[in-house]
Image (cartoon, rainbow, N blue to C red):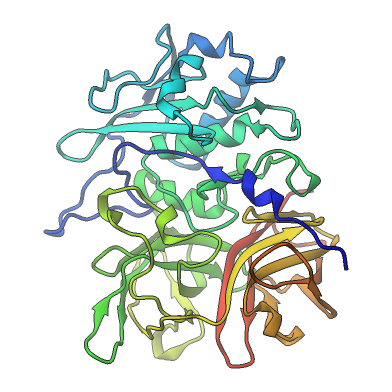
Length: 450
């Protein structure tokens, strides 16, 4: 076997440096239980295109469709929820200082924003301002003038539309998602990762859509699942802060919504279509870490899931395998979890085409792929311990192999075949050890339309 490098992982950077707290994917709650907006109340939202978009600096590849990419990024969110944007222009080149908003919602690519980024390699930055009630009153977006961008998939550059779509999600009040294939995942690959253009984050995942609808609607006819995670410790029970809870459609296996528990242990999954769902909870100690989720606000001080716990699959009423959600109905589903200090099964990276990363793997229906998974304990799995959330993605058991990468943990590979009739969306990889411990790479596979 050839020894491979982990060079791809260095190309994955935090997408947004937030100077003000943002709400999570579900509506946030004050300590006294009152709802805080954490979203725009005005509609339409007036967006000012800086004149720098018409004459971009040299870090944006000549001939790139910058204006078109910006408009498409805005349209993705308008198509998903009850949000409207009104476009105007501004001669302003720089975003507002952190302590002095000007009520102009600016999108800029000017090199004058270089001091805001400093030595950071983040491709984009969104700065959001709130009123005393928590409603958003200004949002500014800047692209890093020290990083290269393009709209045609030029290797080594960031995709303009993907970056802008992510940053507009922050402008709308969304925080990072722990679903690997979501647009709001905290890291964006450069074009060329896996030998492919990095276009998948242009398209909103189901998790992104349910997230933005939880803030802006429409929610008529949809249901919700909410609850609390508590640890069943030996000394005393305590709430779980930073636990990842997500749901998959029971029939298709598509990941449709996720939440990260607050300090009081609460999670909220809104905007679910009526149907049956599999609910999964796990600690954030994999490709997306707890510290990636938020910079402040309700997640202030979150550095790791506390306490850590073993992954679980939730049960419905009367211990049914799935949770049934009805239209306009709220399901309460709380769980005790079992804390543990050192998981033996801890996947950290995924990959294909000879590269490892933490970006979702873009797959096409009807094709066969070799997939890599790296992390502690993966070399102890047998073929029966690897499965996919979709019944239409099949693992070839005889293909399981140990690979050699320059990593501090083992890496395995296995072949999967994607069914021709699979729905586009995000699907998970499930690993289970012989001892019964299991872990999910949530939304690690993105099935692209043909």
